Length: 505
Image (cartoon, rainbow, N blue to C red; front, side, top):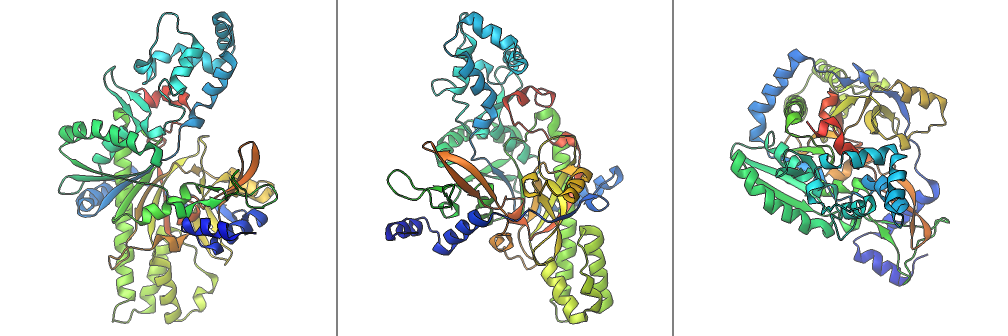
C-alpha cells in the first residue's frame, strides 16, 4: 500500500507507520457508537450548587487559586468560514443582478433582510467603506472578501464581536484576555493566556496582541503572559478515498489533514501549569455579562480545588507507610460515588483490602476536570452521559450526538431524557498528588473519533478526526459535571448571533 517515498513522507511528519495503519483500520471499520447507559442529570451525575453553597466555593478559589500556576487555554485556530455561510449564499444570489433585483430578493429573505436593517449595529460596521450607491452585494463582498474585511477567511478570534462605542469595538480575542484577567491572575499579578492558532494567522494575533495588551495591562495593573502554539504535524491524520485507499495529491504524495481539536491534547500537555481553564473562542460576553461568567468560573475552580485536595489527601494516605484500614477505604469509595458520581464495581464487595487499595489508587490518580453544564434549552452541543467502555467500566463522559446510535430506540429515550448540554466550560487539574505533571496522552480513548466526507480538487475523500478534546481525549480523567446558569453561555456560531441581546448589552 505504501511505497518507500510514502514511508519517508510519513516519517518526516513524525508519525509511526503503525499509527497510519490504525487510522486506515478505523476508516474501514468505523468507530463504535458510544455505549451510553443513562444521561447524567441533577443528583445523578450533575452537581447542582445552590445559592448558599456558592460562597463556600468562591472563598476556596479566591483564597487559594492565586498560589497555583493557572493558565487560560483557548482553541482558536479554526477559520470563521462557516459563520458566514448564509452571507456567502446571499452573495451568490445577488452578484450580477441589478440593485432593484437585489432589494427584492433581500425583502423575501427574513435573515438577510434583518442583517441589512441592523447592519449599523454590527461591531464591524465602522470598518466598511460605504457610499451612497454601495449595493448589498458590494457590502457582502466587503465583509467577506480579501479586498475588504476578509472575515470569511479570518479566525473567529480576530473578528470584532462587541461594540461599546464607535471607537471601542472588541475582538473575541480581546474579550477572552479581559475575562481571564478577572480570575486567572497570581499573587504577582501575572495572567497567563495560551491560544492554539493556525500558522497562517499567527501574525494577525500578534498584531492584535500588540494593540490590546498595553491597554489592558494599564487598565487592570496585571501583566499578561501570552503564548501561542500550533496543532502539531504529528497529530495530522491520513485521508482516504471512498474505497479506503490512501488519497493522493496530484503529485502522488499522500494527503494528510488536521485531526480536529482532539489533537490539541498534545498542546495542552505541553503547558507548564497546575490548573487550566478551557473554553471555545466564540463563547464570549460583553462586560455587562462578564460578572456572572467570572463568578461561575471561580465557583467551578473552587469545586475543583476542594475535590483535588480531598483526592490528594486520600492518595497520600493510600501510598504512605502506614496501613489504611478497610473501613477508611470504604469511606473513600463512598466519597467517589456520592461526590464524583463514580459507579462502584459489582465485584468491589468481594475484594480484600489490598485489591480495594489498588482500585482506589488507579481510580483517583489521574487528571481531574470539572465541567460546567447548562440546562438544555435547544442550543447545539454534546451532553453529559454515563458511558460503558469496552472493558465494562462505566464513567461520566461528554458525548456528541454524532457518537450515539440514533436508530436504537433505547438510546433515543436516553437522549430525550437528558437535561443538560456541554457549553465547553472546563477547569482542569493536570498534576498528580506529588506535584508531577500527568502525561495527558495516556488518558485518551483511542477508540473514539469522527469520520467525515470531504472533497479535495473535486474528488471525494474521507477524513478522520481524533477523539474530541473534551470527549475521547479526556475520556479517562476524573470527571465532575456541575450545573452553571444559561447566562454564562453566549456562543457565536453565525454572524447573526452578534445581534442577539447577550452580545449587545
